[in-house]
Amino acid sequence: MAVLDLNDSKQVEKFQTFVREQDGGQVTQDPKWGELKANWGHVYIYRTNDSGEITAAMAVLTIEAVPGKLLAYCPKGPVANIQDVELVKSLVQEALDNLPDNVFLLRMDPEVLYDKNLDAAYQAAGFVTRNVDVTYMHGNIQPRRNVELFYDGRGEGASVITNEEELMHHFKSDYRNQIRRAKKDGVTITSGRSKEDIDAFFETYKMMAKAQNITHRPIDYFYRMQELWADDSAFRVFLAHFDGQVVAAGIGFSYGDKIWYMYAGSNRSYAKHYGPYLVQWEMLKWGLAEKKVRYDFGGVGDFTPEDGLYKFKHGFAYHDPHVEYIGELDWVLDQEAYDKYLEGFAE
Image 1 (cartoon, rainbow, N blue to C red):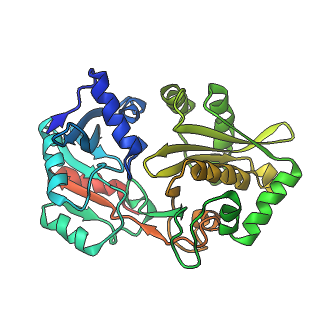
Image 2: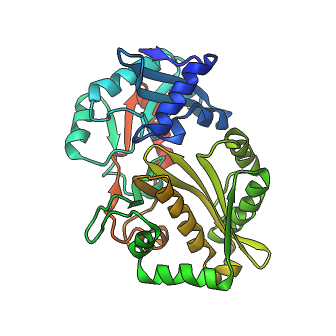
């Protein structure tokens, strides 16, 4: 059992390497993510084997979510064998031993597929699980339903993707045509990690948020992200250019066995030139070059064409199985505060 000392640069590097290279590793479990979330507290727990190699890691961030009470959140983690319920429970207990006394809930939402037997095992161990009974997309912190493209050939009619031609033929035919149309129209893609790239991305991000009537993160959040990962190849900003304008953009992270398409933006005035499709093409090629197992398009409300997010993403992952995670594994310490907190997730 160990708590990460953030002043021990060698151990921090080992922790970061583990969450970056381990299958199921997550950028949200990297201590850099804790730095990005500057207004959150944090504690990092890990396990090692007899050789001193890290075998499990858990980043827990804290914030006041109910007056006077702290939510402890392990985003998309821990990076561990989630099937080993006792291991995960021991990580939770050690985290709580090192967190303030006013924590009312420790929540995890690992990227492991929903399984009724695993769900039952966590309930039997004392956890409250929030999954199939939560039908509202925003009823969980992270959407449970995701669209993912699997380079290793999963799903009916799918085959292993080893080159760009095979990748292109994995898409729906009209998506292939739209990518070709974008190129023919003169749309080009650049990628980088500079502050200027963030500025260009943010303009399209604001446009998209306004068009969809949704809130968006402030520019300083993305500046901080850029500063933390400025020299890190795991982070890239993709920009689609047309006629001197940035018309679409995407931010991605390469951690664990996947590329995560995390943020996007587009200028609808240029929709007929299909910039977002070309952004996806270049980001998906990045995953291919990195020999990733999967490309994560992120969450959707439901696996139906009526869901706009699903409609766009599914065309790329046309052959791939639907991904539905186990959802939230909650260790509740204060039932009254927990009930109050859940009111914020009601539809």
